Length: 248
Image 1 (cartoon, rainbow, N blue to C red):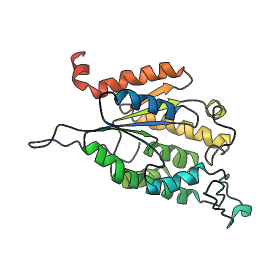
Image 2 (image 1 turned 180 degrees about the vertical axis):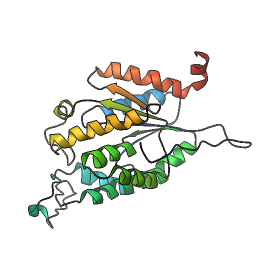
Image 3 (image 1 turned 180 degrees about the horizontal axis):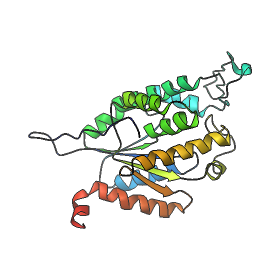
Image 4 (image 1 turned 90 degrees about the horizontal axis):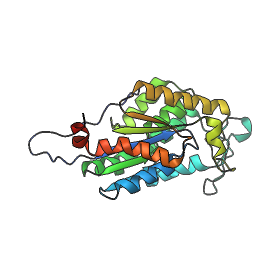
């Protein structure tokens, strides 16, 4: 179970009823997260203020970490890469990066994003849609890199300050099918071995099983229009809970 806890929604006399909604997209590489996140943001944006974000990124600090992830170095630890970092816009960054150091990089990016972008938007009553969040770190660094899940959960808890999405949409796909959709020049994570990606997928499914009320798990191999319709069916209830309650 993830170590971070739910967002405390304000209540009581004098507190505005406007409370933001936080939706995240998760899944293996090539699952279609970015496409579905954009489609959802466009639809919600017709009636509500939406802030669309992605991880790592969204802030100056986050973009530095994003450059690391999108670099085309293998990320594998070997004597040949020790001390041979090349900084050409970081696109070919190939230094040895310890898994714990990588965990700290993602945590730092997330802490800044929560503080600078996500919490202020939620406090204003906006909808925040984020392409990846803390569950990605649990899946990739915890299960994929085989770090202690307890350590990863504690790090996520510190980085998020306890912030938890209202809804997490997990687009599930076999790693080999997802990676087949990825461009030939793969980034640091995409270039990892198949066993790594299988552990990531298994990790996602485990995380979702432990928190079924928060997760909506969908088959990402369906046509994009069908996936979009299933997502909207769930999100619409989140946006209009009073209408959903009348149907019960």
